[in-house]
Length: 347
Ligand SMILES: [Zn+2]
Image (cartoon, rainbow, N blue to C red; front, side):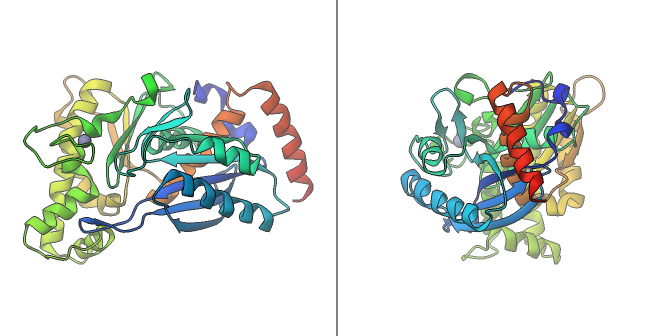
């Protein structure tokens, strides 16, 4: 990870294709339905040529087998394409030295190495990263934040993730664990969190939090999915709107520590809740504004792409920055030249 802006991605925006793998969780009330992993083929501009969702297997070993099957099948059905690598964004923290996903409480997998088996089976280089960090790279790589040196991306889904771009670099910290604000307890007597602690920021701010608020208001014993909750709110359901308002306040509450700690110029939100940004955005902006001690408050906005696309683009950016960024090994650059020629030949 390095000085991405200094390099400028435009040079690499010619050809070659990338597999993007993103586990997108869908939930239903308090019960976790099988979660969905999206596997997509993208060109280097982040345009998706095809994509497919599969249920996320319950353990990493099965996942490696299933993902390999799908990827090989997609490679076979696109013999005309040259593939540069596989990017995987995960709902956890990735230790790049030990090549393992370390902390993924919402995924409920043990510590695991997904990269090794996938590389062996596909012959492609695999890059993995925390979903929020991957979204930071996508913002930088795809040009929405080219002049920004201090930016925070907050991903809100079944948990809350924070990716930090500080002084023009992605902050990873020891074991890649930097940015776990979602698991800072705001109230030690609060509801139980997936990390086994209590009252973490994400139990007040995640999609699950909104569903809990909705159920607590006596709205339904059989809770809806978060997507349905959003639709209810869009159709004017007062209980759904109140639940989402509480979620927005929950997000804003935690933003105070993020703003105090990092003083970003810009904060980008990724998550389904941004569908109601007109209503929920101002709640969050007000909390962010209130936490600034001196000077102008940071810009606050939803990601330009839809949440599912933003995360997939994050997975694509992982491969691009690793292979074509300034820290890319010379050998990779040479391989890319070959790949580019091969791909151009068929266009
Ligand atoms: Zn927690």
